[in-house]
Amino acid sequence: MQLSDTMEALPEGWSLAEVGEGFALGRYRTSEGSIDLSCYELAEGIILTDIDLACPTLPAFNPSGTRVATVNWCALGRCEVDFGDRGSFVVGEGTLCVSSATARAFAYPTGRYRGFELFVDDEVTAGPAGVVREAQARS
Image 1 (cartoon, rainbow, N blue to C red):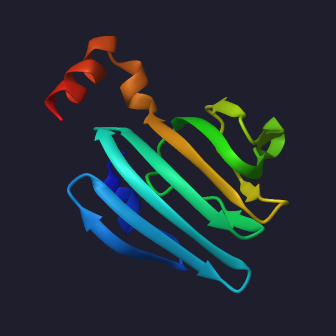
Image 2: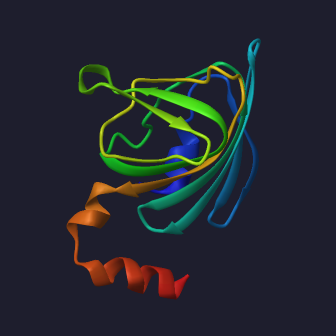
């Protein structure tokens, strides 16, 4: 999972507002609202997203097709994540959600969400612990 692959595979409705070395800003506009997504590639296979959302729903997507672990922290609003047959989870203000399940859909009952999500490719977690520290030190 690399940032460039992720941004190139955005679903219909998304646009790239800005792209730089290890950084991308994506925008999604619908009749229901919008989302601004700032993405930072911290190391190969590790992406941090800054999410600023103003709409009630967002389709889930996994453009890399790889399994990822996520850490999602909500600063404002509420996010309901549907994991299909694995259940669902609510991330409310001040809540942290750690998951390795693939989300099927996202709902935002307040119509507003501000948070941060860290994506870690399974290949990173399968390797030796020192690999991540070395990659971060080179950045």
